[in-house]
Amino acid sequence: MKYNIFTVDVEGHVGTDPVNNLIYADLGNKGKWGIDKIMDICKAYGVKGLFFVDIAEAWDYGEEKIAGVLKHIQARGHDVGVHIHPDHMADRKRLFLWEYTYEEQYEIIKKCTEFYVCTLGKKPIAFRAGKYGANYDTLDILSKLGYLADFSEFYGQKWCGINPPLTCTKLVRYKSLLEVPTTAYMSFNQFGYSRFDKLDTNMDLGEFRKIVPQLVRSDEVDVIVSFAHSFSLIDWRTRKDSPKANLKLALQLERMFQCLEEKQSVKNVSLEQLLNETKERELIPSLKYVEMKGLKSFLYFGKRAIHVLKMKLSSKVVKGEIKDEHS
Ligand SMILES: [Zn+2]
Image (cartoon, rainbow, N blue to C red; front, side):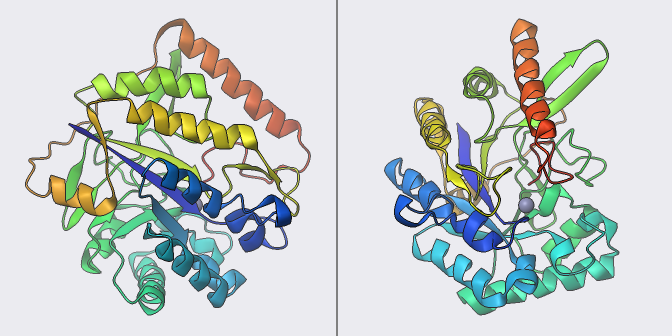
């Protein structure tokens, strides 16, 4: 049996009102197309999501605003994890946790953990570093602070500082933590160039439908981590202060849920179920990966290149967001 867990990174990084526009995406009489729309779709498919809220934004956009986001997600019955983009609360120039010393990271993570405890009245269980930028110091600190799961490993992604990698797509234990890796696969490997990508709500639906069966069949995959951002269902890159609903992307998220639901050997789980069901299981790490092969890899590589080019041509694209992995 393989598991599938749906995760959402909840954050706003550009514009004059990121919490309203990129987290709630409150479009007035057109509805709320951020976390609420995502939670509506979750409800329709019986999915309990794990929402990683960038708590560092509390000291950038206002503690009350971010506390409100945490409470809102919990009130709608989903799990809330801790996500940290340290530049919002520490040093604007250092975007990755691995750029901070152990002591600095400890202070940052402890402060965010305390904020979570004060706001929700319980200890956080799960963590994902902003930009997957964790290193072994991060994992040691999480373990010391009593976390039970980390979702920062992203095999093949240079932003991830867990070197050497703990695992690729198998679950693994590290101290008190269950490491639940972002589902990475080699999307292209030709002419000496290769790249890894992840399952993302904004990826090409055809590519998702092609790679998911391969991941499901592979003995190298324990868990399929599907991924969204709070702003995954809106157009925001060229209109960060006036986002627009994207119906096609909302439908695509439903198709992705349907695709996973159809797989008999995949069980959709909440964070608690994942922890409970793997508690007694022997976990064996592996660095083997699933690879998209053949002509299809050229097709999706081309589509991705066009997508990136379109973003580059948009003069309003914010530096550092050319790749889709802005997480
Ligand atoms: Zn993030």
